[in-house]
Image 1: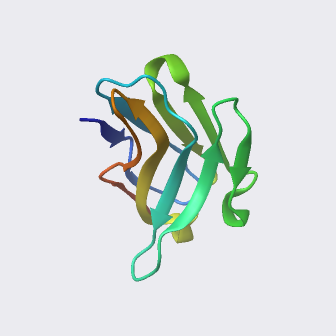
Image 2 (image 1 turned 45 degrees about the vertical axis):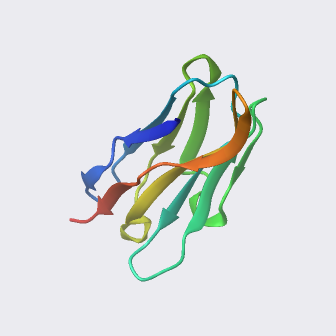
Image 3 (image 1 turned 120 degrees about the vertical axis):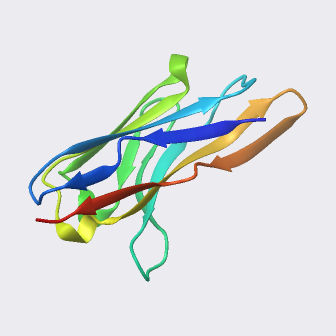
Length: 120
């Protein structure tokens, strides 16, 4: 069984920074692309950032230039560095791992979510 465990969320003032981490645990051979999504209160889940196994990245328009996604393949971990945070960044942030290869299976996994609140 694979688990994605997120950490690093919390309360931060506008203009501040946070770094989210998401570690995948279990008997994993490899992981494909990884991504961060977020779901603001009362809204649909949206893509924040995406990174391939080779390190190519893609960002949602609202976070370009402020957020940076990275990964450590040896640790099966993905990070999200969030700078210049705005109140509209407030949301539950979810980690996603695509094509997680284990013995006899390959599937997509989601983390449980971590709350990020940007407020003065």
